[in-house]
Length: 169
Image (cartoon, rainbow, N blue to C red):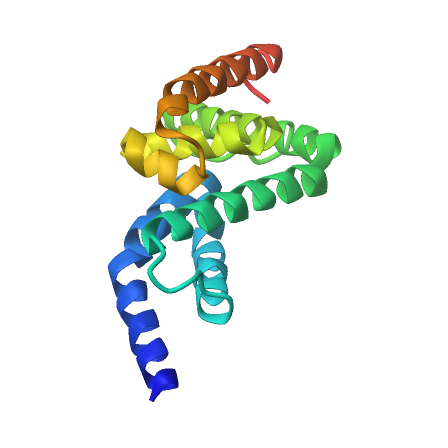
């Protein structure tokens, strides 16, 4: 009976939160988002938080960590040589110039997020997803009165790293 209840709870949580977790990860990772979202829900199924926990906050925390870990792995894997090869490939991606610039900017933002302190990157991503200070406090495990300062420091670190990268990776 307990196993049935746990499976039912998982199904409910999956249906309630899949789209928002997938959307967050898509903004972070692009095409890799579905695999990352599946990994988040596998973690929910195999190692759920304590009963009575704020499941939404737990899912967002796990999802942002998963996304940041994948960004770091991708950056290590691709390396500078891979970036240079992509920049000077013989067959550039077709499409309007603004689409290309948008993709470059996405890549640069993802690279900067991967270099940031994890809690800062998580705070910016979750705030961008529309979380209020109370939700951020619960998700990040930080006092509500500290969220404003945390966001300010996160924004400053992002701006600094983005400028150091020349506005692009």
